[in-house]
View 1 (cartoon, rainbow over the protein chains, first blue to last red):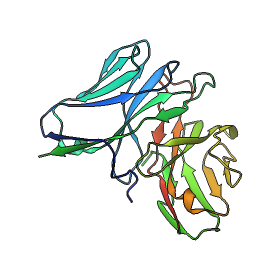
View 2: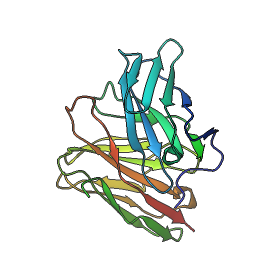
View 3: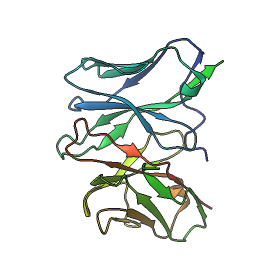
View 4: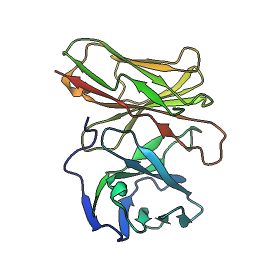
Length: 115
Length: 115
């Protein structure tokens, strides 16, 4: 079952290249941001997160950069592999005043990795 | 499998029929969320439970939608008198309150098609 659309912004890379996926968020009061990976027919899978008191966080092959001045997030994937092909979503937490994770998702980006 | 599970994976129904979806969260998670995802879009928040209490509902959740979590474990989402506009992927997520950088874990969703 296809759960994401065919007309998303698409980034095509070669295997082994580094990928950079960008996202603009909307709420300057958001204090927590997450990147999710979604493969066809599956739910979003957590990749990496960052709090607003940081501007960079690194994981295994992934790095998230946060620029609060321009409300911009990026996800960098090093040495991209075919298994990284998916739709990537950034999400911001708008639940700061409610105490729970009320995520607002951005427009996804489809990453296509060619062998 | 100790992740979030949803049932059924796919549901095809005729307009006007009622449908019910089930979500089993990760066992120790006290928070449960429902999101809806339409083609080409990121998931949108529908509702949130802390234990058995439904603490927030989105304006997206019309009167035809009702969600329950009777014993604070599994949850059901019912849609009455389905409309073609209800066709979407319905995603359930769970989390543990109080965890550092509380993370939402999503299920694989129920794909609803209303004919």
